Amino acid sequence: MRPERAVLPGIGISLVIAIISQWINASVIKGIGAPTVALLIGMLLGNTVVRQPLWYSGTAWAEKRLLEYSVTLLGATITFQTIMALKISGLGFILIQMAVTILCAIWIGKRLHFSEGMTLLMAGGNAVCGSSAIAAITPAIEAKDEDKRLSITLVNLMGTILMLTLPLIGYAAFGANNLLRGALIGGTVQSVGQVIASATMVNQATTTYATLFKILRIIMLIVVVVVFSQLHQRHQQQLSATGATEVTPISWTSNLKRALPWYVIGFFILCIWNSWFTFPPVVVNLAHLLSNWCEVTALAAIGLRLNFAAFIKAGKKLALYGGGLMIVQVVCALLLIKFLL
Image (cartoon, helix red, strand yellow):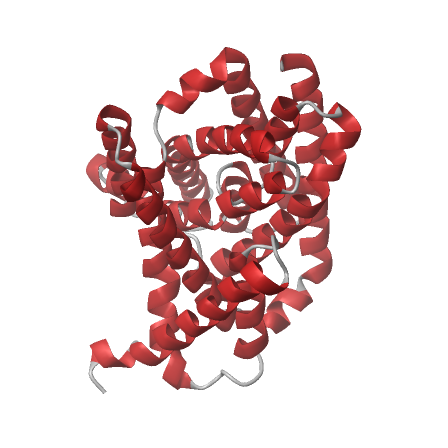
């Protein structure tokens, strides 16, 4: 079979799962999020009936490329004017919330003896925008595919829990204040779809505010990718100094290219373009639609390729990691909102 044809079965089954997941999210279990549904269906099938080598090439392509396309297209849906809309207090809230999430994710991950790759992917996925952030960070820190799959699975499960519980927590903490409830959801929940689904359970005003706070986190993606790349390089140099591993010197241009892969650059260019010229609503809506479909299909492929036995084996540690980080995120957000907003 030709290489281009070898990928078709895996891409095809990933797309079928994506279509079913979109339908389930729209008509059966509304609001849970098509990406989460696709991931769960993929995990079920990939560890039972869809285990033949026939699917491997296509699911590998979909896992890698479609997430990259999703990241790029996301840039066409946001603008830097968002920063102005949230003012200094809103910007301060997001920056501190992201910093605390990243530092605690790294600290908890180290305490539980997860790899550097897993801790940084968990930090970025939870602080920025879920699967899209993990896809952007993975090559910059040379993370293993297994770490990428585990972190995406855990981040999506955490996002689903927060998506369903934060509307209740927000009402208990802030009453009917739509700005503060939007800040809690937009500053904490992982993926864009989960943020919108969670805020929609409250009302349209909360959805608007939550989306603005979420977009500000997405704008910080490129900064997180560059910083994490530098942290990885420093870690590798430390290992080399102790003789634990041998590190090949990397030029400045190669390091920059790895920290900023083509799809992160594409995200940044589209964001600047949209900020400067403003895309028509039809273009923004199309970019959002295509980005969503790419993400859902990619997560279906990731589920198909995820080793569920390995996930269960690390179940206790993963539960402690995800649960501990969720508590930190929610408590930190509640305190910051109270004192800053």
